[in-house]
Image (cartoon, rainbow, N blue to C red; front, side):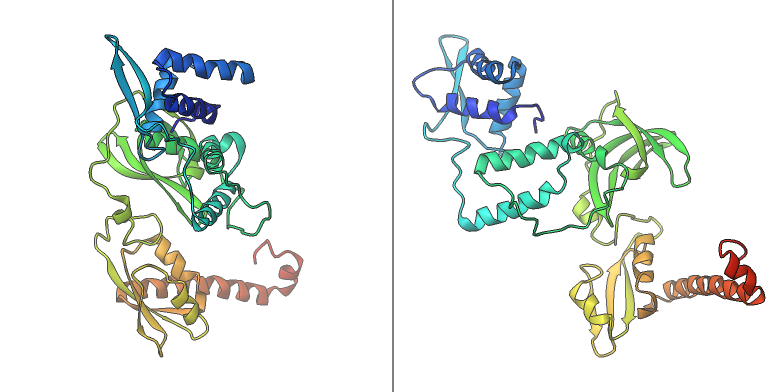
Length: 356
């Protein structure tokens, strides 16, 4: 999608030219018409290439799907117009229900409005508002969970653009342990989980290529890489994440496993109405037992741990044993603190940050 300034004004002027069946607008005529308006209002101009890109965008079925045809005449010349003189990209009529839905969508998107950080999204929202005459409700009636302090959010727009336009990236990335390294990433897909964003793509290594998962908050910087793009020909990301909780797909768990969990009576109704995973099934309602079929990963483990004593892993046995061991370690941490503090009450009361 074009992200140039004044795009909506250009579309509006081109729309009028394509609807005018009393004149034949060649490409230079369209450039002059747009530049006349831009010069008067903003003191700027655009190139012939930009107008050709605008025509391509307006024709695209995912944007306006405008029926623009190039009609040859007088030898090598051609002019542009709509096949239907009554057509306009700004004449889309919406039902009351559609307008309500669209307004809700705009309200949801507007929470990400942040000037230069998300210029691509600003244009999407402005396009919707201008094209359909629909603006978000001035009252703040909906809130979304969002980590405003999360690093890397300003990369989101550029990474989406790179994935859309198949632009490889030279990236400086900081690992979980704080080690920085340069790498080339071919971006395919972005996914949000637990208030964090992740970039998935193919990474070039000394041993070849591999699928990689980069957290945006660990990206230090990136620039376009001057290498051929390696297209995604194998992965359907909707299917790729189908059997996992979160974003980590571990090779040591290549197939989904049935995880059986028992919740206490207070928590069980909450889990039933807010499933842990789309595969969730209740297998014994009176005993508060349910199952999910997933590929185990660290996000699943963290999710189960988040319920504390309100959940028990029944199967598989290896996962139950793993939880027993980690819970024993956690209990040992608390037992050690209690023992140390009992032996030296004065020290603990004075400074909890020392031996206790």
